[in-house]
Length: 472
Image 1: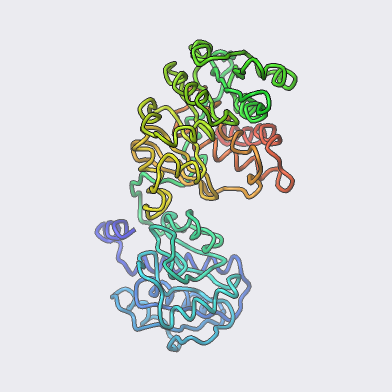
Image 2 (image 1 turned 90 degrees about the vertical axis):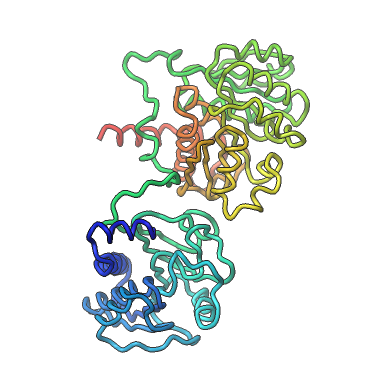
C-alpha cells in the first residue's frame, strides 16, 4: 500500500486528494449502514488519523452530530491539512468510556507494536461494544501484514479499507476482529501481487465447462482409492464429489475385501478391485487424476499405494492418511511429487509433514508458501481461513469459509471436488482454489444440519450460478 500510494502521488494525484477520497468512502459506508447518531471519531497522529478528520467533517456536513478526540497532534503533512479543515473542537483522547458510534482512526495497517497507554485503554473499553465500532483500514492494534495482534486490538463491526484487502482482513484472528470488510477504490490503479482473495474471478475463466461435442472420456477420468471393508464411506464421498463437479468417469479402486460394501452403495461411480500396490499402479495407468487418503489407513500399504500412484503420471490429490503416513520421512513423499499434485492437510497433518513451520511463520500464508516450495506441489492448508499455495509463490486465501463444514467427511468431499477438477484438465492451483470456494458455497446453501453426504448434491446449484455468471 505504501508503494501504491507513492506511485499514485508520483503520477500526479496529491496525497490530500487520496485522503479525501478515503474519508469519503468511509463516510459513505457509515451512512449506508447506520442511522444518523452521535459519532466520535478517534484520530491518531498518522495518515489514518488524517482519514478520520475527513470522516468527521463529512459526517457533520451531512447532519450527523460528530466530534473528534485526538490521541496526539497530527504528525504528517496530509494529516495536518485535514485537521485544519475540521472546524469543530478537538478534545484530547483519554481512557474514559466513549458513547455513541465510534470511528477508529487511531492506527492503520502499518502498526507493528502492541497498543499501550490511552490507546490500549480505549481498545479494552471498545471490546465490550464492537457493534458500534467502525475501523478505518484495520482495527487499531491489528498489523496489516499478519492479522496477528501482539496484544489487545480494537474489534469492529465494520472495517473500510482501500484498494484491496490486506492479509489482516482474511487471516484469523484478524478476520474476526474486522467485522464486515468494505474495499473502497480510491484511484490507486493496478498493483501486482502474488497473493489473491480466493473467488470466482481468480479461476472462473479457466473452469472446465463441457461443450456440445464433449463426451465422458474427454471430461476426465478420476480414481479414488478406498480403505478396507470397515472404512469405505470416505472414498465414496470423494468419488461422488468428483462426479458432481464434472469428471466424466469416476472409479473407486477397492481392496477385494471391501468390494461388497462399496458395490452396495455405488451407482454412477464405477468399482474395480485391487489387492497390491502393483495392481493399483496397473489399474491407474490411464487415469487423469487420483485421490488417495480418505480413510485409507496409516500403514505401509497406504505408503506403497501413494508411491505406486506417483509412478503413473496421474495428478495426485493427497488427503488425511496419505499425508500422515509420511510423517517419519516427509522427504520420501516430496521426492515423488510434482507441481500438478495437491496436498490438503488440516493444521495437525501440516505439522506432521512440516514440523515447526507453522509456529515459525508470521502467518498461514507464509507457512503454506514455504510448504508448497518444499513439497514441490500445491498445498491447501485447511481452516476458517483456508490458504492455497503453489510452488511458484502464488497464494490465495478463502474468504467464504462456512462454519457448517465442521462435520465429519467434509474434507473427503473437498478432496473429491479438487480431484474432479484436476481430472478435467484444470490447473492444480486453480482447481484447489475453485474446489475450496465451491465447497464453502455449497455448505452455505444448506446451512444448519449439514452433513457431508449433502455436499456433493449441493454442488450443481453453485455450478449453475457460476455457469450463468460466465455467460453474462
